Length: 574
Image 1 (cartoon, rainbow, N blue to C red):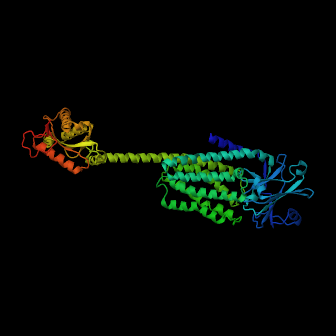
Image 2: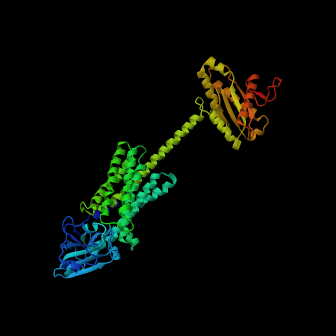
Image 3: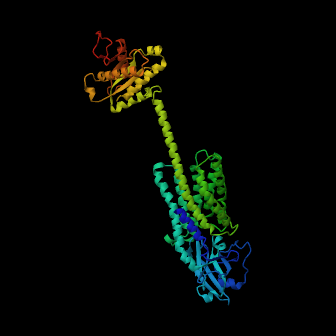
């Protein structure tokens, strides 16, 4: 819908209904002091300059003479229009066929109040509202005091006041809609930046801000909100917002395109050229009014290096395989083409068609929408890369914490789990399992069968509610849960006996190649608060070796090394 509305508005602007007569070819100029009147100019006989040098003016007051060619205009008041950037006091005089001079004097505020959409003034020609007098007007004299830009003269045209009065509201609404369309991606950027923190979103937001400010100011919308704004202020806002927008665009390009797609030397060059309009604007468009009509030429020329370098950079990034650059190619190419026309007219190389300025407005707004899609694409890609990185990190962590043969926890993850138990005390006992006569299994049946035994044991221990890990060749550790069963007499032995019985049965069923039973010896140690892993492991290891010396296939949970009895207390056979 937005695209359709923009296209319909663009076609509407190209409609011939806006009757106007450009006067750039017919106008002539001369300069004078501020106290020289129109009557003096007419009577003096001083020649007006109609040559190609007619815009090279040095007087504080500039006089423009144009023939009154209003035959193609509809009936009603005729007005003189032109670029209103930097204007102050103006006069419009109509010379009739009998030599009578009709005059109108406009204060700086009156010139502001006469604004037309897209930064024009519209001052009525005195007497043109009367059909009888209008038919007798032969020549128009326009006086401008201290004009700041040549386009105030070169873009002079005669237009129907009624037509432009009728179109002022629709055109203002159109420019307001364009500003609104540009602001939507700005809201989107600011909303998501709070969560995502990608810095290119901030630079894009600054670009959008500069675009909105330029459109708001240069279109004349600012005079609706701030009717007393001077035309000097409006001109400075126009020029500074464009300079800032271009500078920020250069930084955005460097931040937006994928890493490595723009060579380092090109990044530095692009940054410098993007900053150039800012420095030139600061020098030639000072806030204290210290600028001349030549300043505009320097200002527009400062944009040329960055325009051409951006075009080269987009091709450069494309050749290097950038995908994101397609969004900038789509969004920026029309802007650069329209801007090159604008620069050429700003340098007074030719008059051109002012209607192309409307194309620039539409291109600027469409660029914000296209790049908003590009920003969304980059966010999606960066999120995918981030998720892939996290997935790889998780995978590496799993590989680092997992035993390769049994896919259960390894010694590294076991150590970390024990350390965490120091804080929340979830485990009450450590049990170390050792497969009895495992070397004989390997020697008699082969290592492949031995590995299968290890896998079966690991899988079953992992299925218990306890934390299981393989900590050595045929050794497994079990951190036993600290629950209500811990209060029962001989708790670890009972629970471990059940586990060992299950292991013996599973190995017998799932590894039928082994003829004899595969049994287990287990050493158990209590885990008290603030006890070190080394002490717990030493105790469990000592009791494991007691179980082996005592005949294997048993669980030992107290020290029995010095006990003489045949079946000492603190042991249990499986």
